[in-house]
Image (cartoon, rainbow, N blue to C red; front, side, top):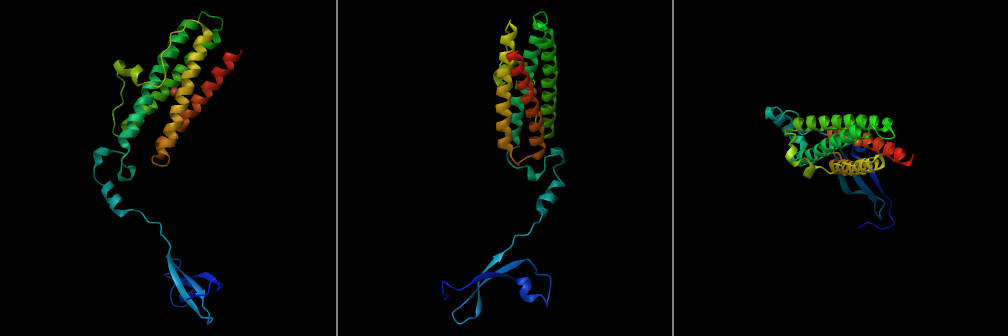
Length: 220
Ligand SMILES: [Fe+2]
Ligand SMILES: [Fe+2]
């Protein structure tokens, strides 16, 4: 037994066998303590994990070529990620329709400049939708462009307001809904899929910019 006041410290196996071999360096560390007789004895061995690739998964990646970019590392959440993307694709498409409607109907109102900006936003949302659809295909899914279910699947609403301020408000609500949805998606994806995460972060930054613009125009 060791006295509780005895000194305990870690000594690497490399230190102990340095003159014999360097192969074992950093592979293990032995906790040692000095007992009452003053002798140093081992307490426990701490294995240091090495960084190594999963060779079986790499071998598996040589097969299932029909899965394209999806390899064994992707994990079991592929279908969930595709579903989340399709919901966001529906949101983007509804946003395109709402902004287009506002662009054409606001053209004769007090601020033609804002009507032009609605078109800029519509084009940005269309580009977001394209990027989401492309990622869905890369993940082995099918992008859902079905108009029959679009508004039901979309996070944001369509809007037919007649007055400019009401349009701005409806668009700001939609942008805030999109920001919340993309933020949650990014948190859900975490480090599971870095390509998707970068895509969503790009889109989120655009939506935040849109929301800021709408807030400023509403305040004018
Ligand atoms: Fe968007
Ligand atoms: Fe947006």
